[in-house]
Image (tube, rainbow, N blue to C red; front, side, top):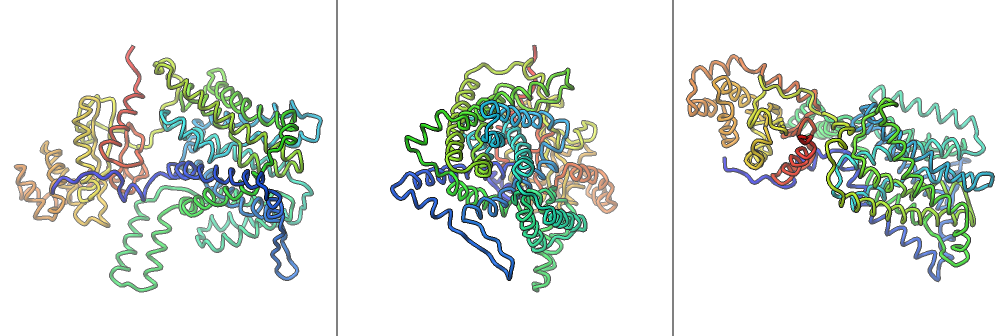
Length: 625
């Protein structure tokens, strides 16, 4: 087979990109849209037709069914209704992090959790120091929030040279921050609690949990229950957006299993042989259920909330009139000053101080997952509280106090961005961190369940190389064939710094010859010719039938009859099964799947991308004294 040029982006990459990567990419992309929405609101309210801003958003909209009626102004429908979807996506992300992300290791997540708590407590105390004893003290929750979209967008722009784990740290911190903000909204900003609808809401949520436990997957049922939960909370006095995060938290997240993918393939083949409407529904259901409900719903709703609902919320709430009187009042207002100091200084000191305390040996020394220097910049980025801060401000204040709070939120967002830019500029100019500074940093989470065993695994390259690249591959997979060219170039480039391990994952439900090819390679391995057979099979991916296998074996000097007999007896299938079982334990369902020093690689597998990942792994190795 002719050597194929490894594509920069492949179907496999597009379909199996990590949910965290997709989440961050959506948030970063929507930052521009959100910024445009803010500018639109400001331009509108400060234009000659600025009086129409409040006229439009104060327009009443009612929905009536018989004697039942729900009536809100347009701003209320956005804040109480559409924003429930935003918090639903937040709930989905919290659950995904608990099931599959950094939060799955409860000890490792201690530092970002404690950092988030410090980043909520210190700003709140600073705000109260300016407003304690006044009616404005009710707004202490404003400074606890961090805007996910703006924070991730700013970090992507000004922290490009920082490690990817910094973005995951910020995302984890924001997730905990969101939980805290939602708790504050539910408990501190709930007035006139009505017990009867609240009890109804609890009952509805119990039904939702029971349906999830029973395996009910019909989306329409959960939609109806979600609407009922939202209405019950709205009537109870608890902020209705809590319904969104509650529904999101019950949506489990998990990687697609190999058995589910095999079942989906079987259903698709049945439909291909007999294309009936019934089999079409079965095939579609099989494909949908192979992916976790959490990932399916994030794919649907996350772009909608990021590119439509949050910008619409900004248009509805970010309109602040910049006239001399309002700005003059805000300049000396304890509300404005408390918000600015709380978000800009409080977030920075609270997050870094709490991280330092959590990582001290005297307190158990929880592992710190990011370097100290860029952590300061990340803490400054967290001072951008925009969306949720505006949300809590709308609940807390009205009139002039609300205008002063909005000005404080705007000013804090700008100042926090500038401060984080300055910190990251200083970080880039400082010399590289030495081994002593890196010593307190936790190693990366290991995704590869079965460590490399030189006595069993097939290793190409020096046994003591500092970086190990493991591939779960299929000899008949066209993408594995394309990746092979990149791997060979990678081994040539890094030499003694890299070793390559090939493990079997034959996808027999889609590649009928893959299983046989894996067994033939193991027969060759017994004779010390695994890598010769490995290369031969990838070079002839169009010739993997039983007669072809015997021809390949003969070309390598192996006994045709002996190979045929061992294939018939499936003598080396247990060795292949060992790799397959390891793939299942590591959550691998497709090929090729790569691990670099035990960490799963998500993204393209061209030479440029893989070389960048290997260089990053080399940079993380401790230097010799």
